Image 1 (tube, rainbow, N blue to C red):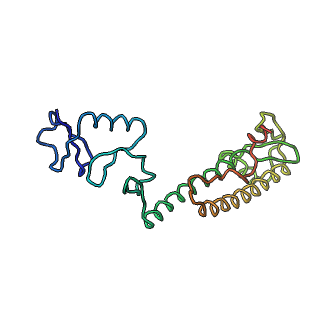
Image 2: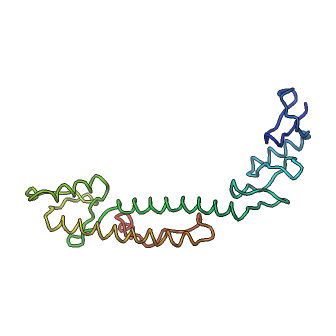
Image 3: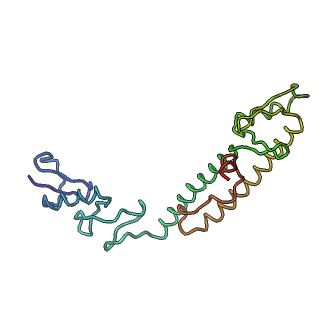
Length: 206
């Protein structure tokens, strides 16, 4: 049995299996060397090829835009710009998701010391209540600590205002993190965990 590697297809071929279907640019690979390549791949190394097209083991490429040259991964300035823009776009989506999730983590009504739900369904309910000329009498509402409180117009107004204030804080914080992330040498390692409005879960851990 003979084993070959094709630089054109980046694949391995076995004579007894592939026969005449082996590409013409084939390079014969000793069985022991082939096994070493497979073992290295299982351990996290990447199978690539040297300047002559022969398969070798290398540290995994930092990105799809890097090319192996003289045993080192290199990237052109143009491709680095593309890579950084992709990473920044990815991180911006994560920051926006953090902002969204954070604003659904509860809203604190200071006057009564209670946390109200702030998920999308609850927000719709608050909006509907504000359209009513008068709230139903003795309107009891379940808070995030599972206790019930009577919701009055004053409480609903305070709750609604606090949600707006929280949104403004987290919106500005997201923009702050975006600007800092875009200046970071490695956007994917940027830490955007600071400065967000406190959530019910965080308050409970204090």
